[in-house]
Length: 407
Image (tube, rainbow, N blue to C red; front, side, top):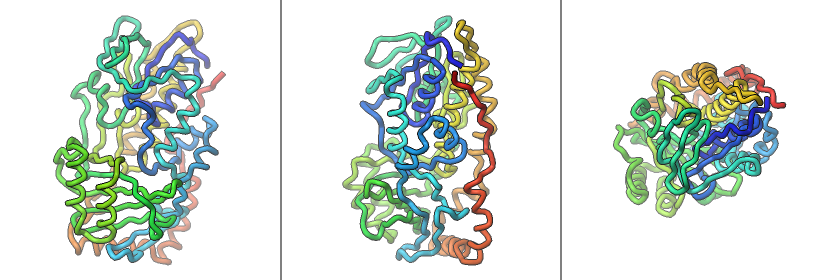
């Protein structure tokens, strides 16, 4: 399905979605450039899981063994109280465990994808799109630093707060704020950390989640319920002070985590919001990944959506292209959205009471939730759920992946 290489595509965003898209577009013969506003690859971030359709796609890319080798070493999750007493534990082969078979750091996944395309794709680091103007059969793109250039298509593969998306889609995009803020950072590993992830609910609708990585460090996630306050717009120093004040007196390992917040240089602090876009394409521009349909970390589907959307969009573009120059990007964009939209809708659907029930505010609420975890982790319930664990390894097809032949 090789297409005319003169068809130039600019991918804006050099993370998982953008790099996956670049790989498949190159496979189909497109001339691909990736622009990333950071000076280099953004290798920070927390654990992501690679499963379902994303796993099938990385196998097609020949990257499954590299991804498996970069596993974070996490063997399951323990729910603990603020005295660090284990309330319940779920190994990763248990149907109730949040630990998946393949857990990898976001940065490791980015590096593996980049290594797979860096020889075949043009990378532009340290710059970003300033203006997009459609002109006849192409798109003229203006940048902050380099000279303008014309492409056949532009694909936005940026994050939830995409600036390039705003240039094209304006106020069409809506956010569904879920009443949560999240913060991520890395801290030194101590003996009590071990190979288990630990989840601790604290009074004040606060959740701590600490997880091992494969670099002898501990990854920390902090979630707390709050009305939308614009905390993500504060300076890093202000965000640190806010977080420390929020957690410092709630018990468990809050003191240790507060100290790590003061010292860290990799803090990420953001509201937890879904992206709701009425359309994912306009003219010669389309969107994939978080820019188009962020599902939030609560859904556990971010990697699946990013990789799957990239694979399908590239395949549909290739299907509607040929060596003679015929090219119908409009039909490709429509097919991509038709295939992906039901999957995204399902991924963004939250269970009743989520996230409120998982983040109780009072001491009584925390005690009730811990009792629920304890019951779920009991021998009787585990025995029942073990029957369903087979489905975790042999999950039903979530979305049909067309076989886009590469010739």
